[in-house]
Image (cartoon, rainbow, N blue to C red; front, side):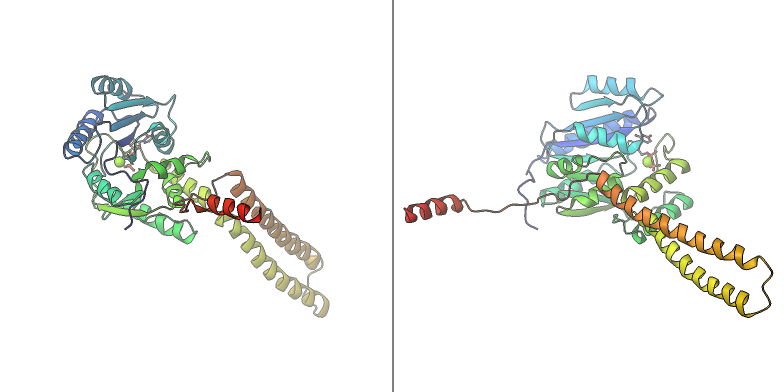
Amino acid sequence: MSRSHSVIEVPALAIVVPCYNEEEILQETCSELLQLMDELEGSGRIQPTSKIYLVDDGSRDATWPLMEAIAAHDRRVVAIRLSRNRGHQNALHAGLSQTVEDAVVSIDADLQDGADNIAAMLEHYAAGSEVVYGVRTERQTDTFFKRFTAEGYYKVMHKLGVDLVFNHADFRLLSRRALDALLEYPEANLFLRGMVRELGFTASQVEYERRVRAAGDSKYPLRRMLSLAWSGITAFSTAPLRAITVLGVVSSALSVAVIAWVLVTRLFTDNAVPGWASILLPLLFIGSVQLLCVGVIGEYIAKLYEEVKRRPKYHIDQICRTQAPVAKYQHRELESN
Ligand code: UDP
Ligand code: MG
């Protein structure tokens, strides 16, 4: 793998941790992360300027005072507080946008994803990966329901044409350049795991087994899971709008057939009850025309939606050029004189 020029040999590392009502676990999480940073720094794998960014997503428990205390006690910890609860994705984005370090890892406060995998991520980074996805190999610790719904979701997303890394949530490393590219995405509906896929750049995966939550409850009850799933679909796919068009075309075709049958029955047989054809014909016709029109409008809305997101159209990975053109131009000018 060729080493990219934006990968730094011994990077300053930032670890971003979104926290919502995590008083039970925060202290433990911080000590584990700080210990990891000591080890990484001791073995010369990260700079001593590396930092942990804790983001309090409008918690209603003692998370914020605890964070303040930790940040006051250790210069490597930065505490950020959002004005109110804005949800995991927004909290994570807020934390990411505050970092200045060379490599940035995002991880959940419960460390279910295992902080020790960060060392492996840094190895991939050093080898040239600008995006390193944390991928769960198994979900034995999740409930059957969570496992089933989560895996089903990846499959549905794939069918809808949304490119996601299977079993990857929001545990990942980004190089400074990849993160800067991500922060260029101005959309309001964040679905970071989908957006990171859009970036490109050299990517790799680190596999791990997910642990159980040590304390506190999951902040993703079914309602929130469904809302994240739905926002993932609507932020990355216009397939549901396209489905209306298809439905419109199919129902129009069917109604043409039924209209023909109604006409034949009415004109050439005695089976038609008076009033039957005059009710059924406009019903079928108007119904299918309407559905088709809604579908066509949907197609334009899909285009509008893509435009309105104002996403960057591309990110440049490398530019190679020799310094020659200027000299050559001067040379030619000299020749013509
Ligand atoms: N979280 C957040 N804001 C919210 C909900 C959750 O910042 O509104 C954080 C939470 O503190 C944790 C992460 O998002 O660090 C993932 O939440 P959780 O571990 O509860 O989700 P699960 O692992 O059950 O999917
Ligand atoms: Mg969790």
